[in-house]
Amino acid sequence: MTFEPCYLRTYESGALARKVEDALRLMEDCTACPRDCHVNRLADEKAICRTGRYAVVSSAFAHFGEEDCLRGWNGSGTIFFSWCNLRCVF
Ligand code: SF4
Image (cartoon, rainbow, N blue to C red):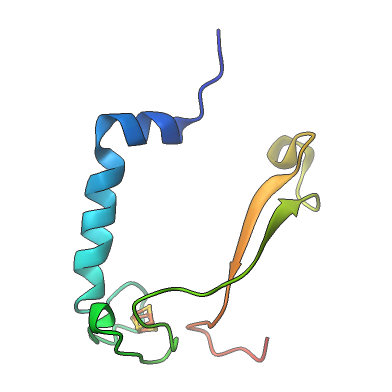
């Protein structure tokens, strides 16, 4: 049996496009996290997380610090975003 990542099925079935539409609709009156700011992020309005229309990627790399079953031989894909809705100092 050939391994196929589930995201390929999500893409091919059209479910990914629907999820993108749902996420964009959510941004118009943002309740993406429990802060429930209700700002229009599609219009680049910002609130607690200071993230407007576009997220800012801080870094992306193969992460080797996870357990073996998660990272395999090539590392797990890791993406860190800037800003935070928890307002921590990092
Ligand atoms: S903190 Fe950011 S993601 Fe969370 S509800 Fe407010 S605007 Fe949306």
